[in-house]
Amino acid sequence: MNRYFMLLCFCMTAAAFHAVQADSVDGIHEITFIEQDELGATILDKISRAKSKIFLAQHIMGDGQYGRAITAKLMEAARRRNKDGSRVDVRLIYDGLVSSLYAVQAPGRLLVSAGVKVQSYNPKERLFAINRRMHSKLMIIDDEVFVGSSNSHACSTISMVCIESDMMITGKKILHDAVQSYLEFWDHQVTWEIAFPEPLWRADEQHEDEKRAVAARYQKKIERYLQMHLPAANRMISEIFSKQSNPGRSPPRKYQVSKIDYVSDPPRKVKNGGMFAQLMEIIASAKKSVRIITPYFFPTGKIKNALASAAGNGAHVEVYTTRRDELVNIFGLALTRSFAFVHEHDIDLYEYQQRKLLHSKLFIVDDRIAYLGSANFDSLSQRFNTENGVLIDLQHDADLHQRFNSEIDLVRQQSKQVMDSKGPGLFDYRDCSQTTCNPLIKLLNPATEVFY
Image 1: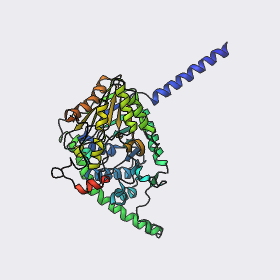
Image 2: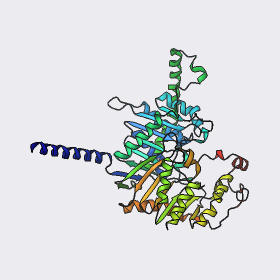
Image 3: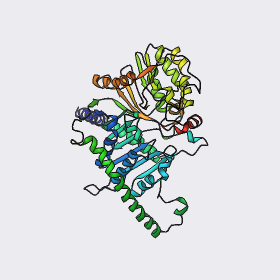
Image 4: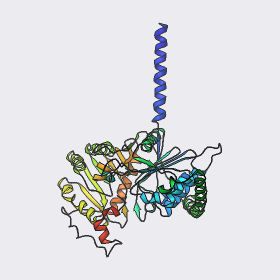
């Protein structure tokens, strides 16, 4: 009898232990939507306060004012010592094609010299691997995870120029999953470490004393760079968070959710599978409604099948995308090719009418689940680019559900529904006299448009 009693106690204790473990991993997560005009200052302020780690993965690392401010803050964080003598683990993964200039210009080199660990995402094992890009946007600062559509680029921080959607999340499960995903990229063979910043043709010729001399020169360059760009970074922070500069600012609202999942592609994209397939399955299962914001709506067969399935289930499908004459001509033509499809399946397609880049990437299905992240509705996100984001259960928080819908409602107020079932031709709608564009470059070289 005693033996059975002891066995029962052991099983109950083990069950309680596993329940506590599960609760500590899952638990309640806290979400904060970051207003776009506060995004740059928020990121810079969080970097300034970091104590343990800064893990940054970016599709675009810009070299404008905001890009230089982030670079300066990353350098400062890598050189900083905590009170216990420890240092902040600062890491950066950037896309090796889109941000390639960043690696060879001064900022990328100085980051390495300042102690930042830098890697370039650049799969080289295939002839046409140039199509395979890291489109993910992720930042982990201590215990906080940032996801959304923004790049480390000035456009992403100014609401008068771009429309973005980003959030900050705290919670053990999301932190665990995001860190594991980041480290999977970091340790994978598709990322290449950026070593000591001197040109490769000189590296083999240097002796240790020469390397020390080079290091000393770079330390002086770092000091000059910080003197030039840290004041601007601190001003950006002060303009938002200082009571003197911004006395009427109120802290952003925080939402608590019990079910949220970090989703990401692996470092080597799974063709027609992975995260994107999961998103399409969610959309295809819709019964009531699908609301989508995507800057690039060039639906492939799989995207069309998911949308058609939702419409066939009786769901009301809305898609909000970039106005056709704001796109490169060939991309605008690709958008118009979807007109017949959306009309055939009674899908409401809207074009954003404001003269700024609609770059948000989110959707809501049946008012029960929402996605926010980096994925577009095109073949690049489906087949080539690595993407990431979060899936959030909206069923138990009416306020959070309303907050997501308000993001889409705001875009809807500034959009116009597409009523024609056939779009114009390649040369019919691009009027460069009314916009700041180079018609030859925009027609012949779509790769110049980096905000896909």
